Image (cartoon, rainbow, N blue to C red; front, side):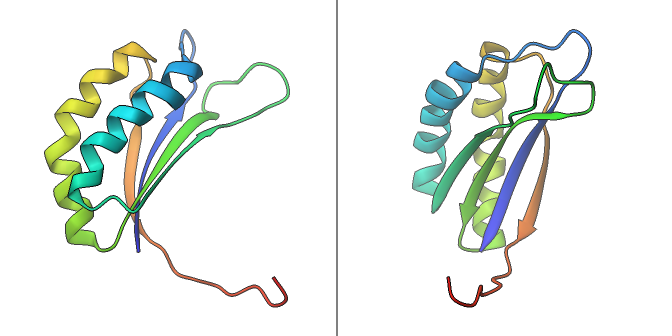
Length: 109
């Protein structure tokens, strides 16, 4: 399983509309990625006590695909569409990376 993650780190003067991100942007992402092999899509709103400080992650997305080729193809084909929506919810440029998911069983779970 391959996980594609986009991370948003807070900076001075940043804005982030979590309501739009977790509803509308995720709808757009799901519609764009699902025909290209998306298995699961998650979005996180990171909770901190108080206001976020520069460098702290305030939101992230994980998109899961069966294999690396699928994930790379999906990212390449949807990058422009998904990036075009970013100004609708933030002025933070996301960092992204691909990761291979490795299972670790939890006894008794």
